[in-house]
Amino acid sequence: MMHRRDFIALAGASLLPLPAWAEETLLMRAIPSSGEKIPAVGLGTDSYLSADARLRDAASQVTRTLLSGGGTLIDTASTYGDAETIFGDVMAAGSLRDKIFIATKCEAPDADEMKRSLARLKTAKLDLLQLHNVHDPNQSLAQFRDWKAQGIVRYTGITATWHGHYAALEATLGREKPDFVQVGYSLEDRLAEDRILPLASEVRAAVLTAVPLGRGGLFRAVRGKEIPDWAKGFASSWAQFFLKFLLADPRVTAVIPGTTDPAHMADNLSAMRGPLPDPDQRQRMVAFVRSL
Image (tube, rainbow, N blue to C red; front, side, top):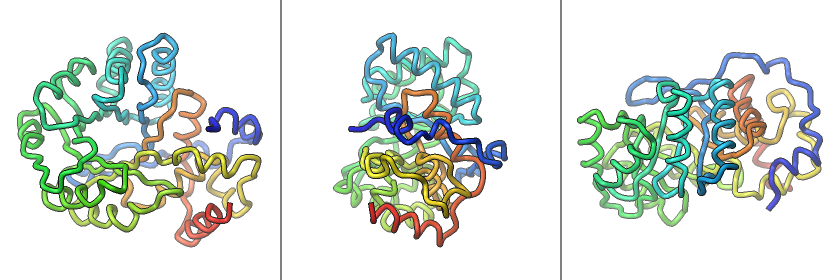
């Protein structure tokens, strides 16, 4: 698997001049159930599985980059190894909790698991608690709603990234109407575009896109290639190209690419600035990726 650091070195992307729109206003998106706005690029943390010194240092640097670049959303999970503990320590050490929109996930509506996440994250309240990998079409979110009523969580959500779970996700999303739905969506995996996003819009659920840079195939496919001339008005890196494709859909509330590299975090955050591709350009982006 090719890592983006290697790709940037090969493509010379680090030498690109900053576009004129680099200092423009950040893209914010409203959470439909409340109207609260959040920055449209956040951080996924499924790479922070071990609490070793290297990952702890990376988490600290990436979090500082996220905040300095205008981001606030960090998405983690009880099953991501030591990720909750690592980012709980980062928030506590820097007194950052009030600056971060912290989202995590539980595997079941279990009070002990939820309390463990609170302890690891060193917080009394979660901004978003999601039921992870929904696979039961009859899944109830009653316990999540109770926690919301008690003030333990501000928003409730559900997640699925594998196509085999989409039927259960759709059934639960339509019936339970959570505040958020997190789904796998990228230029190399667009099934959610037809199946999940329309329903999310109907029930007024915010959408987080997991794995928005794909699972490695996108960067491998563009290795050694320049961004097409017709895309240079809105993207100066491949990460911006891939992320802005998603953000150009107004139903997408935020993308949450994972990284342990502050330079990649800064690059991802730049997708919140400047123009987004229009519908015709989005179609060209799809055709371009299919041609690779």
